[in-house]
Image 1: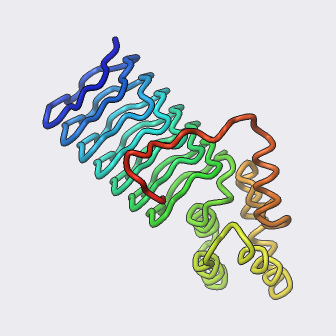
Image 2: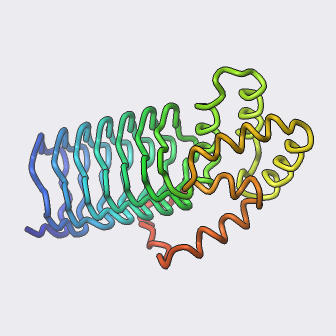
Length: 247
């Protein structure tokens, strides 16, 4: 079933089943989508504004360039979804799952992602500006080395309360641009200053072999990024420009 060019506002779609639908140029605003099933939908560029979407399911959905603004997405499921170039702004997303989702160039700005699950997700160039990522799961997550928020959270989870490690993670989190020269100089200085601490960081990165964090630590972010870009034929997705957000 196909729905096109519809602006849905103030309606109740509680637990509705929209699986496999095609939603072209759709906007949902101030709409109750609690537990709604969007499984397998084709809805590139769809927009959700101030919607209650707690527990909604987007498994296997095609959502490239989608835009979520001010939505309650707690416990929502995005497993296997294509969210390339999508934007989440000002959303509450605690305990969301993104297992094996495509999150290339996806932006998370001013969102709460506490206890979210990114296991197996493809995250090259995913952006987490001012996002809360406490307790996220990153097992098997791919190419998140460019995200300072995720790198520091991955390390923080393995500090085991050791004060020196916690301090070092805090220093990393304060670097002005995690993926460029500041990081390169920091890692070289750490290796010389405290080889044991450097080894701990490398051992921690080894727990996330597909993240490319270890490559970035050894070779610098530019080299690791070059390697990551040359392992895929994917082109950068189109970004929804209806509202500009530098996530």
